[in-house]
View (cartoon, rainbow, N blue to C red):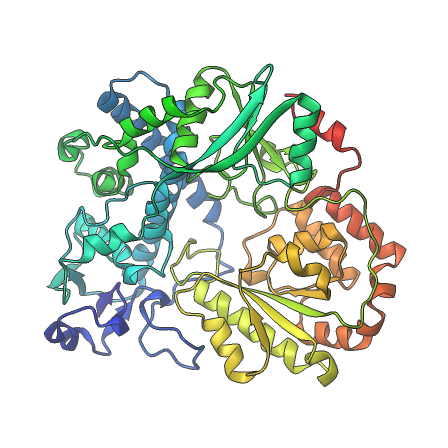
Length: 584
């Protein structure tokens, strides 16, 4: 059997090569390598079947291995960066700058390595179709550029992933490679470079008597920012965005800098061998530009606290954090997404920020209690049914590229298909008058809009909207939201006390921690969460006209309030909450 790790339908190859490999004896690495415009009953190609949700005994061990390799590489790269830039910084300094890139790199490489291992055990792989590519073709400019290349199946036919697997096969020396060629290889680097966005940073107007607090990329409501500035007497306002200075590129011999003499055929050695081809230029050749831009910013030097929510792709701000961390500043990061509900400490939360504030009292991973930061209301309001309002279905569809280990999860294609099946089952069981009130907001990360296409194929007149308007800007226009996946919009609904129903498929989610599983059971007891789409539809048919009576029931409101206290906390005293976050 011949292994394929690129999309055959894209017809990237010369006609001669395309004819040679386009046979039934090929095995596709995963579903990203076929055009998925609709969910079909049968796959067009033979796709590796590896993912098993119930086989999760080794999952904790695999995640510990990711963290171990992350620590090994962080120590290794800290030494290399000190050597390259003539510095003597501790690894904590470099972790702030390179940590997000490194964790994503190690995690995704670990996933691919494990998938390849399972393919070799399960299938009789005799050959691998290897496209001739320049090893430095995918050298990223920065963290964002690397993220696009590594994690997204949407861009440039997954050729970075193909290159990754080919390097693993070369390293393991277990499968014969058959070289093939692209139709036009010369434009590849230019196309890859176009995927990168110009590096920008925020120009901030800042005034303070004591430079106690500075916030940047802090994803909290304006009300909280205003109250913080009023309480601690400072001004912190974004004026505009500026391009990062690109005055100077310093040449480094990557082959020499990252040379390794370890020839062991294991994963750690593999990572060290491919670092030179994957380490972003902003950390090496263009690092001087960060130092220069830092000196030109008007951001406060040595503030006592630096608040942020999602700093991982702003290279200058990470440099700023590292410099001020060395000077004694405390870096505080507030929860950005819904990652504080899972059992395993995956790649979601980056440990480089020691002070982390969660959306509620669920204190796993050492997080400290704060507020839900996607919205802010002065006080809880009770729902009132409006005849003109409709029902909003929230759909997620996940990238075709596999992001998780095969033991313990479903593959992303199967998750997307299960969400599609649940959606159709729900819609089919609605009464006609109720069905006509449903609209869909699709949060799609796929190369092809497979979920939307497949639903539209069956229900041509159902209204779709995308990400152009955020959920919290439109939810008040709907009587009910129906969620096929537990993500941020679900927590927003609960926080705002808007009628909400979850159609829950355990296999579509990562494993939850004990506290969230406890509350999930309570939500099921009070008909907020359903395991069966048909049951959810029947419940809505029966209760839609009296949603306010159902939702506002005191016993149900008590369950909702308890849930919010742990996972999307409302503020009882904003002034006191702000004082608490400065206590450490």
